[in-house]
Length: 89
Image (tube, rainbow, N blue to C red; front, side, top):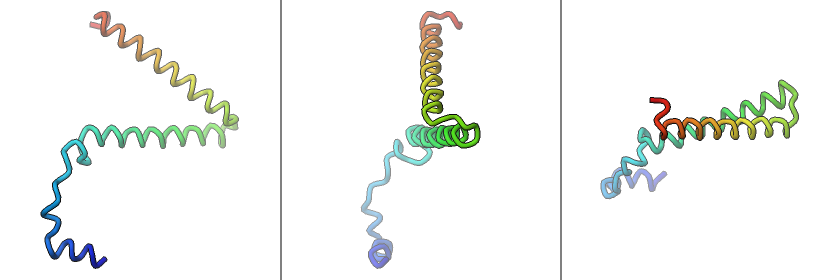
């Protein structure tokens, strides 16, 4: 507590470089990191719902998420190929 008060009263904070805009709370990088954390919490809630409320075994929940990941990957590859070849334009 004393060190913090001295840090403020002696104005030592002026000698510290500001945080780069890349690491600011509203930057694209930090917003992406926040979105990943929110996605992981949503996946955990879905897993808990599937195992506790629906009664699916844990391995079944993992299988559902694995299949969803594979399906999403296939869809993204197909859309990427369509964009590359100009089929969607």
